Length: 308
Image (cartoon, rainbow, N blue to C red; front, side, top):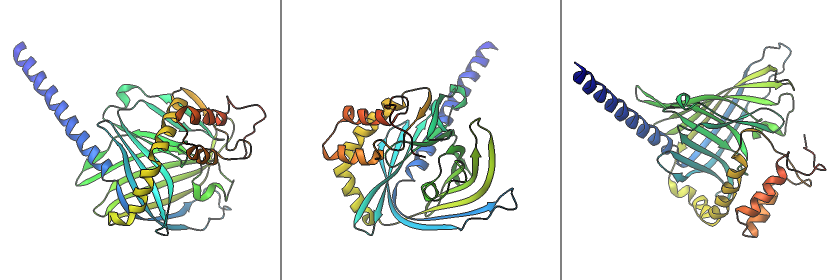
């Protein structure tokens, strides 16, 4: 009887390990399916506000051509760098997303350019992938851990996470200070879609949240001929070494628990301006880290102030 139970336990264990590996391969395929050359349409509309006096803001629609390039493709990590192609003649480094398997370290946006870094229990992230999203200068935006779902021919991942205001709004309005993102990434027959159900929140100093408005967002990625993005691929070949140094420097900043507060400007200049100059000098990660530390609030000189 004991021998039969042992054989059954071993068989079940083997089954679960095999099933987990199969799911992981499906996950990795879905993540890699987000790479390629895409024509993107961005659409956002505000849908609800609890205050009847709130004036709904105009809908937002834009389009772009973008290369989503895998710059790290390991068994437990896929890093995808997004590059915008402007008028078929120039390239702008855009956002980056890292996907990490069974990752315990996450960061969540609080407010006032402050993120909280923390660790999740290992049993809470089993089988999950963390998506970490970074801004154009590789500073943090938001992260969250969830499982990819593969059912009825659908492949999707969804998560809720607080973030700073999106680029389309942060320079235009100040009536809210936190966006709670409801992210839904789904692979489609034509590419993929990033569907969003977002809450625009007013968060006070004690952490109390008041909902200002909700919005629906659809970022539609339609895959096109890779040749359309060749200029972006060529651009990256000339810039990738420097940005690898930047990521190495940022990793030392991110190796923490607790809060990280970043200044928006130092000597009235944003971080990207400094990084551009460092690239021209062929700087390595040590020089980049010195600059990054000037933007970390608890290490910055007392004469520096955060620009609201």
